[in-house]
Amino acid sequence: MAFTLKNRIILFVLMVVSYVLFGVLGYILIRIYVEHHTANLTDAIYFSVATISTLGYYPPGTTLTSEIGKWFHIAYLTVGLGVIFGGIQTVVGPWLEMKIKKAERGWGKPLPKDEHVIICGNNELTSYLTSKLKIFGIPFIVVDKNPPENIPHVEGDCSEMVNLKKANIGRASALIALKDDKDNAIIALTARNLNDEVNIISLANSMQSEEILKKSGANAVISKDKVLGSTIELWAKGDFKYDIFASSNRLPVNEKRIKAALSGKKISDLKFREKYGTILAVHRGDRVITDPAPGFTLKSGDVVIYVPNEPKEGDAS
Amino acid sequence: MIVCGYNNTTKNLNAKFIDHSFDEESENFIWGNPEDPETLKKAGIDKEDILIAATDDDKRNIYITLLARNLNPFINIGVILKRKENVEKAYKAGANNVLLESEIIGREILNSFLNPRAAELINMVMFSDTVNMYAIQLPRMYVGHRLRDTDIRERVGNVVAIKRGEKIIKNPGPKTLLKKGDVLIFFKK
Image (cartoon, rainbow over all chains, first blue to last red; front, side):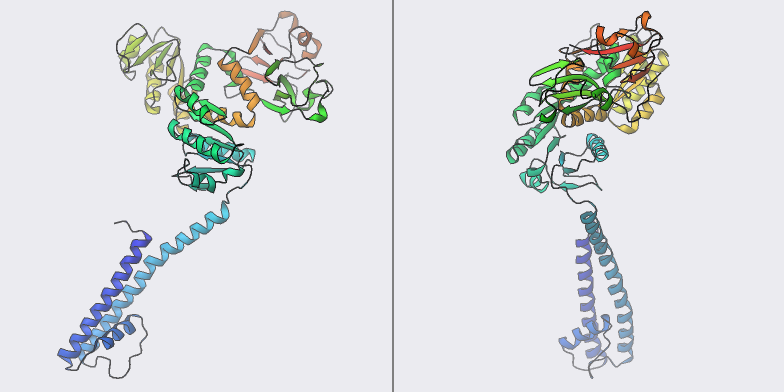
């Protein structure tokens, strides 16, 4: 039997009750067989309770007056104190601890309510993603049956509607499903049902599941085998693309959407290279225009994909 | 190239596989345990230039790395790992490169919602050949010149990065001095 709070309370109550019964029995036996008085049950219970509660007031005629009776009273009181104070300690300690923990969780980690990312599942990927999201200052909630501590979370199965609602799916900007493919498909279906707009990104553990996950409502599916397999292949071939995009000193790549106010401007007009970085390509509708010339005219809605300038721009020599 | 572990991640690699999971042995499928030095020798580890340890157990992969490094000090060893705490151990065991699953996949996931268009483009470059990058050895006539004093921009395009030995110069500025052996990297369809 584990000593959970509930079990401790039950044990404590049982001990007190049996101790009272023991007192009642002793009181009656001594009253009748030693002191040759009459004894009634109410007096017996009163005697026991008044003693172990250290109330210490006994109406005339209810105390034990014989030598044996007095010794019984002393012993009963002494052991009773142990039972009560020991018992209270084992119960109140864990109860207080639980209260404090709950309060800490409540104050320290409020669940974000808006524009947040919901992460389904708790594994190595979860810790990678939460550490990065923290750096970017993007709020997030982890939903899992065994959620990580010290991080905003909802405890429960992510494929159940209740739990996604608790995580405010209606106002979330993205949901990332990191469980097995079957769970991810059901999570995507459930999430899509609750929010038409949310950006659902799902991990595909097996290549065959990619299609099904897309059909379940995922906006993007990351196939573990494909990404890992291609990455190791590029490295093995000694392809420079590995150094550029996958190694530890890879190029960071960002994107910027061109707003209506900048429509019609040329890349050179915007001083893009000086202000932001080197443009790799411009994404326009379904087309990708790679390495646009400085004279290229941007339109509203274009997405410029570029390698951002490093914070400290010193010209490498 | 020898690949230890035949699975969905590795099966498309053009390599010699060591595993227990195929029905019959052939030239490129060696039935055996890669933790056994004899199996590695049978696969010809002394003549190969690359070994990839990609079984689904980190400890096995690290052990394979130790064995392989011992049998061939010059072989290039790549390891795929699941747990972050094992990365350092794999390098100590002699790995040349370690791919941490959660980091590679996590990066993909993060990019796909922070920079979805950029992620798409990079995926096209990395995993399909619809958009390509070019790496050009710096022609001798440009050695010793600054980037802005050359006509590289007009003749070829924007230099996105320069590979100089192991180093990669990101976003080379106009004053960047070009050196012998530099590899210029361009982004072109």
